[in-house]
Length: 160
Image (tube, rainbow, N blue to C red; front, top):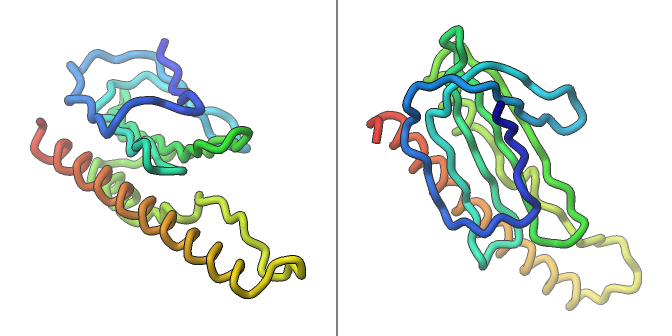
């Protein structure tokens, strides 16, 4: 049985698993706030957008289920201590449907915002600096997501 549960601070660079051997395993995918998705499936590809420069990143795993449909797991992680990971898992009838869903995900929806513009203790200059820092983090997370998904979908498409 394989359980996909990502450690809070993985130390892997962007790595993608080669297409699986076709061997089916029992797999459990976590879903934040919901019942886990349990299935018999073979791993097609997996990747991590982790980088030592990123405060937040995503990890993705794509499986072919016993019945032929496709399961995708997306985990959003953060380096800050105490920040919980966010787990999503979805089922799709085809790999194309799964790819389309991955392309439509907004990676910034998982980015923590540590800025309260209504806080009277913050000066205008400090608000501007914090907003600029948040924009830089958001840009980095978006670039890492696009690189991860682009590489993952290329590998799934080419079978490499």
